[in-house]
Length: 237
Image (tube, rainbow, N blue to C red; front, side, top):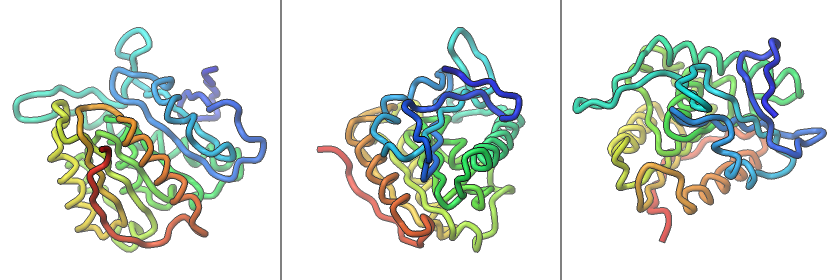
């Protein structure tokens, strides 16, 4: 059931059954043209003590079609409406704080991740407001170059971990976006893993398994913020 509570910055659904006393919080963000139900299959694999929240993008593109910002895919690459992306980033930061306060969950027990545009916004939150989350996952997405002026100081970014997962044959967002993300996170000294898979723009079974493993491992750490290093692997078989 969609919750539209004025006390929260975004409309959202919760993975059922919701834990009575959640130990952790995971936000899963849909892509452009999708909606909050798209990642329910992925949410089903998350441990039962984790509160999984699926927010709806604030822009309506059509019937059951929503977005975090408008984008045009051109020969020169994706062209975004930067003001909308920034408004969604700010809404998500507020929304996370509201959820944490409502359920008594610390930032160190909070993760944000998403598919495509949802992954873009997850990275935007993690890299600009690292005090809000322990980590972020980008599944077939990218990190916006427009984010550069808003990046948090390096010492604050040491708190977060990231997962960059991408299909090698992605025609919507080519794999070089994942490689650029890897290079940026290395430069910022953000602990992260890069995983590349056969296939195109989507969440493969192998990508989903790796994401679930990463989520479990990140939340299992004592403070969910321990430092690490970048690794790369060819996911799938």
